[in-house]
Length: 406
Figure 1: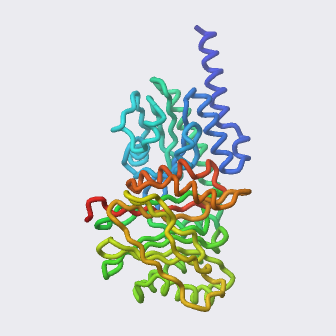
Figure 2: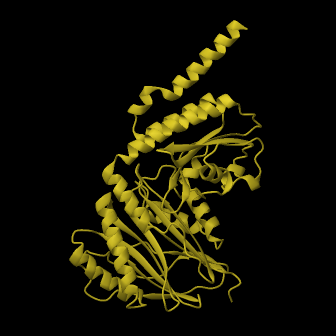
């Protein structure tokens, strides 16, 4: 018995040292999380391991790093606090063990699609606050032990170190907070329409110039916009905030998207000299039957309808905002929006690939978009079109007119 106990103690010490290895701290944040998850998956002999961090603006968990569940990160999975397995861990601040997973236990369908049968998860704390969740899963039934739980909690503490490292990046943290305050945490409920969106950063700290917005107009019209400010970091986030605020203000002056973008272009050229911004702005009528759209150097939206092939909206593309080449007014195109039609706006990070003409990516997007519910459409597009490791930010916004709204 003495020899067996020594062997168990030696193995326990080896496992602890693997997770607390000082070399982890020398890695960049993203590499540290990847290496930590790989070690956890190996030590606990699990099929998956994932870290989800809390977005304080939307109060949702955002898939940040994963091994065996890479789709979570690629598709920009978000879990409301209190919902499903991970959401419950974050809300209760307690570990959760699921011996047998069933659809009622989880919010994220990827866990079911992967065929996971057992899950173990723990909260990640920094300064007494829950900043995320670390969980592992197996394809076969697994009775996780107290030692498994202790090791996973220790790994969560190491993940918290990465969170603290990130928080010390002052400029990135400021830009991230600004950007997330500008992106809608949750989309507003709109009569006659359903909506969904995704934002996936193309670099480590998630700070870029891609943005989208949806807002109700006092007249009953609905404003919808997606845009891209060139560059990354705090400077781009500040310009993004100013452009977004100005666009909302101008929407109270005119319902015409082309006229609004003309005014916005003058503002950008005068007050944001040197910045380059693209935007696609649309107004959806109060009866939800039509939309008016104008593009300032931005890729045209995709329109999928139940009785016609999916296609890019046929409209002119005017110059980007701030380039100083617009001598005449910008164009506005009116498009029918029949019941069940789905409109998808997106940024170029979704369809651009190095060494490939953009038409290839656009055609792949058109082929992927169906007149489904917006959440399913976003999942499909991010799965079929989105890169495993995006090299540029990706933002998409999907809006569907209710099929029964006749």
